[in-house]
Length: 185
Image (spheres, rainbow, N blue to C red):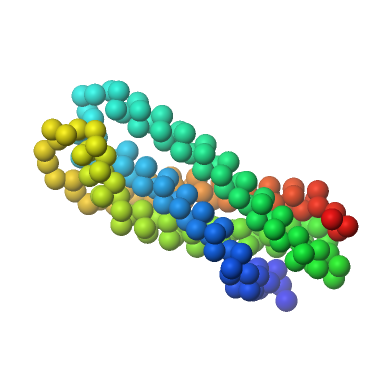
């Protein structure tokens, strides 16, 4: 059995453990995509065209969200790996090296990440107009106009690139946890 097959099998067999992990990853993707789409929405840009304060606040929140998502996902990945100590110990007892176990966990992270990336962006596309309407209603009560439903390819591309980097970093972080892990523990 190769590592990719084993990774899919682990995800399938550990559904209960993966539910919260996948939800947190998907919600993070949804949040980032929705925020990026909000920043690129033409109605929002027109509404904030003459008020630099709103644009700077929006940009500041964007940076805060990105940093929070990065640390949140890495810590949830590390705690998820620690919760699977028995499974990792079993692999080690059967003779898998730390490198192979790390590669397996890296593959699981990438597979789960790609799935949540598609789902999170899909849900984000669906709710992006609602979020833009909510922001304009919250900040500019005198804004009159219709918020158009748009799909911004640049927001999708930035979200995909950002999360591919984060998922690779999470996988490498998991590899670090595996090398620190002792079979005796």
